[in-house]
Image (cartoon, rainbow, N blue to C red; front, side, top):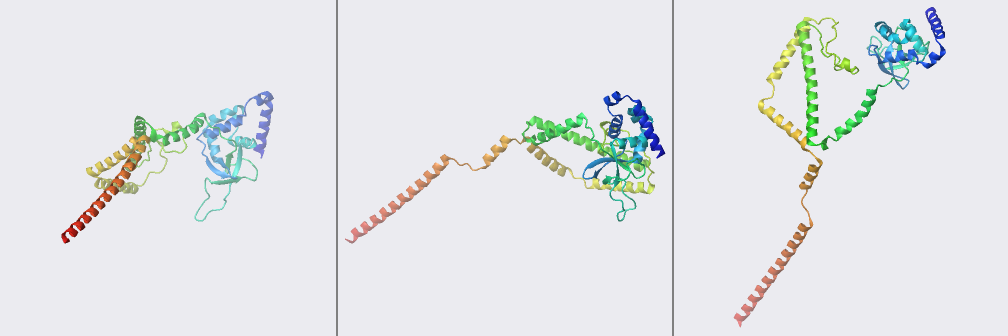
Length: 344
């Protein structure tokens, strides 16, 4: 309480020293500090549900360590840059830039030895809204600003989706460009992941070191610079036991031998390649005109000329049958007359 009272006096004194015009003309420095800290990836944070809304929150002890390790962030505060992490957090709470939260589930679940480090459901802390490092969570209350590239990307995604849907009607050359570009990018990514995994396994088995080249290549949230960072982080974990390294060495050798033994032969590879080539050719050569012409060719040809020919054929067949019938009747009458003449 004495420390917070001294902080309030110091804050009131500094705010009284500042001229009112300059204070009203410039943006709140603590607002700028809060935006800068939230955009920095050094402060570990998570998302949770609080009162039917998703909020981004962090732990109190992480905020203290972040302020100590990143003193350049406090330069935005100018005259208040000498405040410690607890005083800065209390100012942010007083300006409603932060709100202290508490976990909803405070009892251990069956089979658990401790509470979750990052709870998925939070509620507003009902007691004093003051900063604390021990089991305290703080959520940002202001809306995060989106950079220009995110706005452009949100407009680009629907256009890309429409372009993907219209791929079958592309010209043949455009289809080839899209196909080989996507196949090349996919092959590059898979090759990078494979070489990365092989290097990690070799270093882990031979030297007992955990070395991941491109350590952030699979990270969900990372800047473009961090995503393509080549050199791995320092391995601070304990080295693995030699029994584990020997076991995984045997497993790797067995897997390689099985893959080599059951690999497809040349004939199977040729059949698979021919099948895939046929599928790709069908996709590339498809067009609406060919599809419509193919449907028309598969239908039986029916037109007026053929219908007239069919009707004339039927009429001629009926006429032929009538002529044959008349001829047979004439032959029977002639035979009867001949028989009657013979009797007479």
